Length: 98
Image (cartoon, rainbow, N blue to C red; front, side):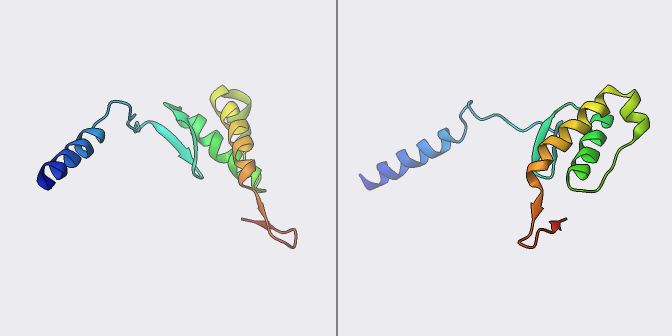
């Protein structure tokens, strides 16, 4: 009887791990600073996100040429600045932690 219970439990564990409800992570997903920004972003959109994130942390970074001429960079810069602003940390003396 004990052997049957073990076999049943192993069966449940094996088949529960193979459920179709899990969604595999795509290689095209873009994360920066531990934040998910989306999938299938252009290189300029990724650069905009990274530059916007640096800016939100107090290190002003922007390619003015791309910002003025590339919509993907422009939108990425604002998205990075907005989402990374939540990561801004200040110590008890009011100093910015980079």
